[in-house]
Image (cartoon, rainbow, N blue to C red; front, top):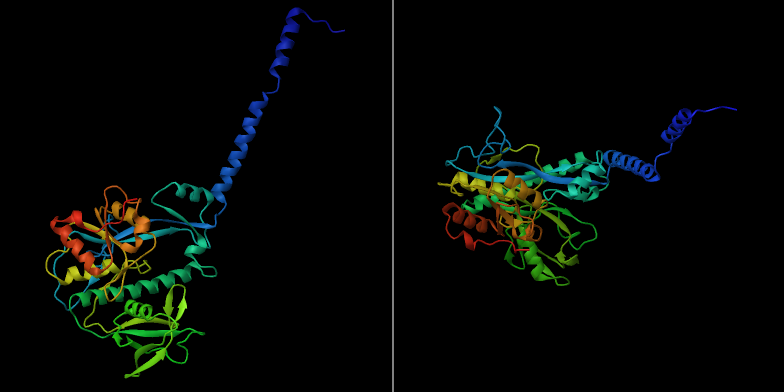
Length: 379
């Protein structure tokens, strides 16, 4: 039998107490902490089927092709040049905006990045298929956007020169004929569409408007030029969505009276058209359209001066504010995305046409009557 003194028994009792298991709540807490750590690790590493749109660089159409807010490199080139023509000094800024996309089908962002973007008002989270159509690589998407950029530059040059009164050949040309539509066998690739029901067609939007007025199930008289010979053909438009269509893809062909060069690499899409047109007009006319102020904007444009909706306008408003702009020219058709999302310190003017934008710049340059400039509805 083992004998213990009182001190021995006391020390043994204290030792047993030291080996007692921690409370159940502590164990559960450590388990939950471990699970949370594993989940956080998964969020940080597992790719999400989304991409993130965020404010991209801004470029001043009146300056060089360097990013606004960064020092110009020694290789920076004027963004717009018009060789052989008299140009005038400009001041201030007419900034075009871009959107940067984080992620692509080959390199998706993590769930952690997506979760963080949800709570950032300057960012947007979109399904990857909404930005990169299924079956299309990021390289193919970039190539398509580059084509849109080149076309938008041509449209911007045409819009600016038309506004300034220059005369030059410009035609609505058939680029493709869709199988199964009424234009098959009637129109050919290369045909120029010059009128609908006797009304001249000056651009793609004019063609859409004329077909809408004609409606569906009613024959339309389409004036064309084929191989330099004018003729009239009869086609009955059909309904596609909410539109009356012939089943053709059209584009504009231009022969400009002089060269206008636009230097902007690694930027795609058609949304800079409006700002290109304004920059060209500012360079070809005396004085400063913006009165030396910092103005930014976005929107597609066509040769007739119509300003169209674009994507990522919320991110572009934040990009404009980050570049120091206090005024922003936005397509009226984007107002549903603008309302309630304007960054502090930025005044948005809603425009439908190039004439609207020029009128807004005149008011901004003088500081007079800006209160009456059209804006998007208050949310």
